[in-house]
Structure formats: structure tokens, C-alpha cells
Length: 427
Image (cartoon, rainbow, N blue to C red; front, top):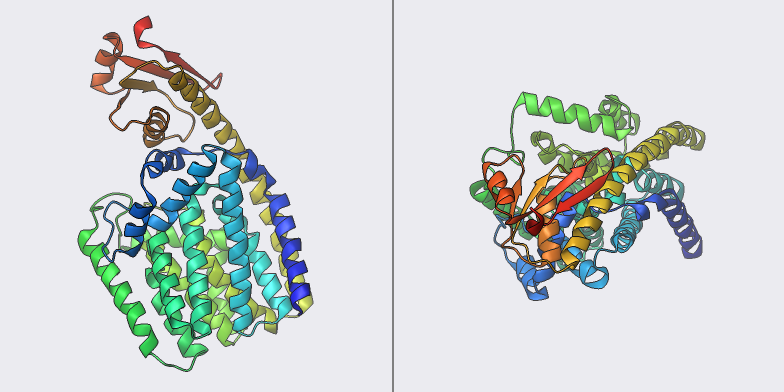
């Protein structure tokens, strides 16, 4: 395929992707994103640079590369949500290009590479990665992992290592990348292992620090190496592969169907990046499939080589209606939820802009799924203060704060989708 044809194909896919996901630009922030926006603007670029270069494990879950996205876009656009989505979409399209480069480097033909990129690029199990800025960590991690793999395949060892480092600083899942690169070297390289030594040393260092310094001893972020955890997570992620329950368990059969190195390597990539997620039963999210599904796409290029074009087209034709259904379902749910948060945030913004000096807040109710840290983050963002006292109406201290006239009372009415604010002096 000529460069001109490849460019036309990429532009056509980009147009299709942006059209299919145009609804994302009508969305809004959720609690995690607002929480990040409450503190990242106050860090300097030097703070992010220090976090990016330090070899120490960040016990406070600071991911400097991903968090810098919030800092930079907020500085440019404030709370203009479409700008955040546009950057996210740009990163995803960059990942499609990198995936294309990787699979072509592995020997995939243009048709197989295009089909795999289409499958990955439009897969609605990754809906939140396309629509929600909070998952920029997964998207950026994939960006640098794919770039690292491509550079390693071209024997650009230093660039590959630098990309691996930045991938880890985007999200800790990249700790598995050295094993992925070793698998590449075994199946496609010259089996030269010395260039891999720095990769494994860094991975071992961060891995051991993560185990020894992990503050999450008994919560949703705790690894649980139990059959119960594996049973829960494996069933969930298997159901995300083809958007049908259990069907993902047939994927290992690809290794028998297509006996070629690309299939084996792609399945290894998918398995390695899924492995840590299988023991996190408290954090089971479809968006986490983003990087593992890049491996699935690589495996599909191997399957496509042994399947007829008609069979591949039939597979995509059967999968596409389920994908469109997933998009419509998730879009409807997400936009409805986001509209409530936008209304709540607009009310808080107007109240804060009124200039009333308030040091304490009590909230009663919130938009569906909007957690406490989102409420606290919004108040910190609009008031540009971190010393505010925020209490739920159910907490013992809340009643005293309200009756004393010290706190503003935020009451969310879910029936009318309205935020009522009682000013302290009106008590």
C-alpha cells in the first residue's frame, strides 16, 4: 500500500470515528475528573517533570504524564469539556496509527492490518476511553507502549526505553511491557537479550516498590490472588471481547486456528496486560481493556491471514451491530448522567461567583453516581481553596453546621434535576 493510500484510509477512519463518537462532545465531567482538576492546575510544570523522572514509586498514585493532561488542558480551556474530548480523540487516533505501524512491522498485510485497526479503533467496550478524560491514563499508557514496541522493533533501544518509562508514568500497567518486548524478541527479533536488561531492572524496581510501599492494604485497589477474584474478573473481561457474555473465552483458540507468530504474540500481549487486572476484583472496568485489546488486534491480524476475506468481512458484519448497540446504549446513559452533573456544577459555579465568603458546605444528595470526591473537588476548584470543610447531611457534624448558619446547604433534587442552595445568612 502506498503512503498516499494509507493516508486516505487513515483520514477516512478518523472521519468515521469522529462521526460515530460526536456525542462525546456533548458530555461533561464526572467526579474523578473534577477531583483531578481541583489540584493539577496548581502544580508547576517542574512538579510534573520531577514526577516523570524520579525512579521512586508514587504512593499517592501521582501519574505525572496522565495528570499533566489535566493541567495543560485546564490551563488552555478551563472547564470547556469538548477540548478535553478533542485531545483524547487525537491520542486515540495516534494510537491507531502506531498500532498500524506495529502490525505492519510484524508482517501483516494491508487488509489484515486495516481490519484489526478498525476492530480496535471502533470497539465500544472502550467507550469510556473515547468519551471520558479520566481514562486518558489508559490511552497514554497504550501510546507509549506501542511506540516503545515499534522503536524496539527498529532497534532504537534508547527511544524504546524512554517510551517505556513514560508509559509507566502514565499508568502502572506498563510494568508488564518488558515481558511483551521479550516475547517480540523471541518470535520476531534476533534473540538478543542484553538490550532488555534495563527494561527488566526498571520493571523489577517499580514492581517491588509497588508491593512494599502500596498503601492499599484492604480496599478496592488491593490485589487479591484468589480463585474468587479470578472467577469474577475473567468472566467480566471475557464478556467485553465480543460484547457477548462468555464469548471471549474462545480467544485462546485463535492460537490453534491461526498457527503463526503474530497470533501467538498478540495473544501473549493481551494476556500479559490483562494479568494484573484479573486480580483486582474491586476495580473491574471495561475501559481497562484498552491496552490489552491492542494485543487482541495484533492477534487478529494473524487470524486474518488464514481466513478468507469473505470470512473476515462476515465476522465484522456480525460484530458491528452489537458494537453499534453498545454505543447507543452507553451514549444514552452517559449523556443523561452528564447532563445532571453539568446542572449541579453550573449551580455551584454561579454560587461561588457570587462572592459569598463560605468556609463550610453540607450536601444533601448528588447526581446519580456522583461521588463525594467530585463534590469536594468542585468546591476546591471554584473557590481555589483546599481548606474548605465539606460534610454530608448524614454526618453528625452536618446538622450543627447548618443550624449554626456557618455552612451553605446544597440540596440536589433528583426529580426536578435541580440544585437548591441555602445561603448561611438565610438560616
